[in-house]
Image 1: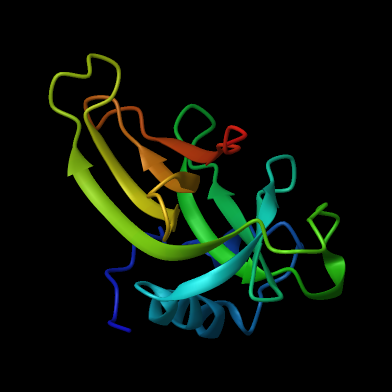
Image 2: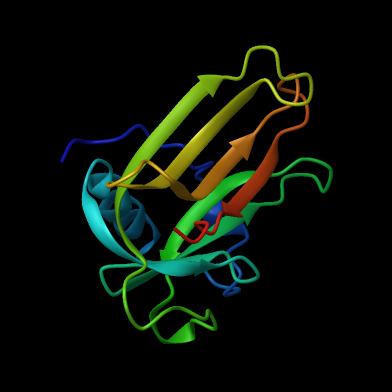
Length: 152
């Protein structure tokens, strides 16, 4: 697995939902970035909690609220015993963790999108995408999108 470019804002110490600085924030981020390019069992995502589970590990993705009008991908942490997410007991798919950073071109609502996605290794279905979507680089917005796979 290769090292990945860090798409997180890095300001998580100021606003983590736990209310306190997480001494493991940098370690969790580095661990997650080292997983980019790897394949994992995917147990689902909980959009309300911004959590997802791969290979028995529950990650929580945190939004950096910036100024209230703009937001972006802030940090990632292990949910540990604090998870309130609902996940499947059996894997839904085998997925690859990918990083994306691209210009959407002719999309009038969004120009640049950066973040991470979980892609099915069998058919390239995108199960989960999270990161920062931008409108003219002036209104970045945090995204956490899960797409169920249609029945075969």
